[in-house]
Length: 378
Image 1 (cartoon, rainbow, N blue to C red):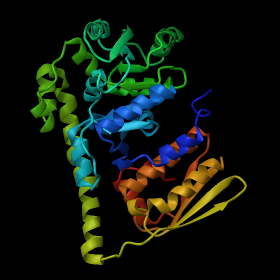
Image 2: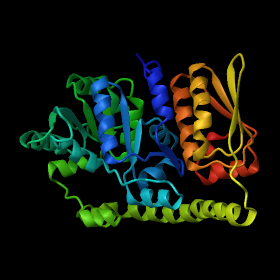
Image 3: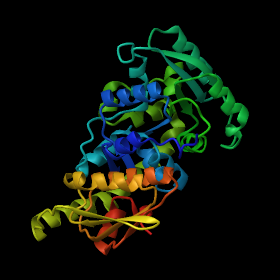
Image 4: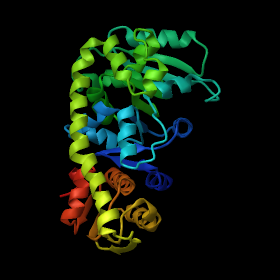
């Protein structure tokens, strides 16, 4: 059964009710660590494909320039804020991100026997020569809830070379529950996306340096540095070649603040203090055509009005047709509603259908652009 065919009715409701916010072009789930661990456990129990992404600042910058990388985030079943800059950006925009959920922290919590009541089978794929094997050996010598059932060093070939039948067959033959990939964020995310239908491990995620931490070849930053958002300084100390990446990402972050975050905050200030526009309730009308469903929105497309539109989105997906959202009578859209739009788009894509918009005013187009989602518009 393909990725598109395996979508269940219950999963439609689950995806549409995910607490996802649109953060400058990325979906970010605001689950806490306990919720993340429950979702992983459920995915393993149900043997459902569960693509997880742990988004940091480099993920954000790469997603803005690489469409396929961005798609790997948009199609993820969970996308956590794995970097204090993402947490800070979210909070500046009024997004209630509860905490930083780093991939390394998720892995450490999964090792705890108190968290998971049976041993999870882990497979390590990637890293430098010998790193995955060392991580596997070390994991199996320690007490905990994880068992390593295999590892593979694929070298430094292309994504196509790393997607050969022999590679995928070796991973699938391990019957792993959890596939931990370390190929570099760009290559790793795209490799996971292209091989989603071929992989059998329920949970798959690019964990990068986590494999090195597990193998003992890298030390993670002290906890206080992590809390202060200074882990990048520690990483440069451990891996000096990373300085250029952090420098480029830092410059890009400043530009994002100036070109996106500050204008969004100014628009909010202007509406609240100068224009004094009262919040508008959202009225929703659904019209079904032969080949599409049109959802007409009248009012503010904001978090507090989600309940009004959720039933229409759910029935639109069930109709198995293209969906058109009419924004003609809409003046506001926020990060939470954009997150819902992303989930609708994801579900439609999995069924082979399209999401389109009409009646997008210049103001609405500007809000889409400032939030980083201009790629959704025609």
